[in-house]
Image (spheres, rainbow, N blue to C red):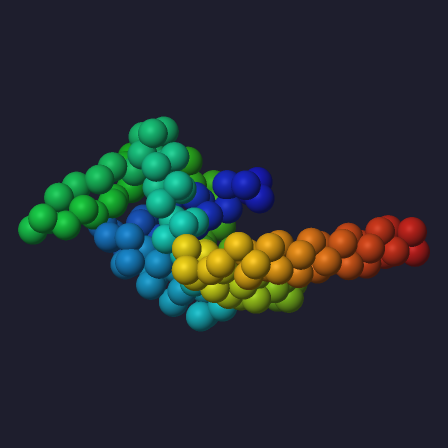
Length: 146
């Protein structure tokens, strides 16, 4: 599974397992299936849904005026060789990858970006730049050691 397509694959598995869902149902299901370690934001879900719709892997349906999404046969074929979704999350959790922390930071920034002033936005960019530089430094040190 390519990293870029992980959320799309997770959405497909979620819809395959849980049936037609609205956006918040997808988010809630992913949170439950990830053992409460990952809650994707709508800013992550909507672009993924748009891509899945465009590629015919899901379709949207109306139910009492609500838009629901369901997996198509083409979507089922696309994930037919993938491991079950719980295995995917168990593997991620076992590696200790900080999905929750990254998701929490992204959601906090995304949810509040519109109400922040220019000074606060610039400070957030500075902090993220420093964090990126420090993480990159750690990765390079590790590469040199190995």
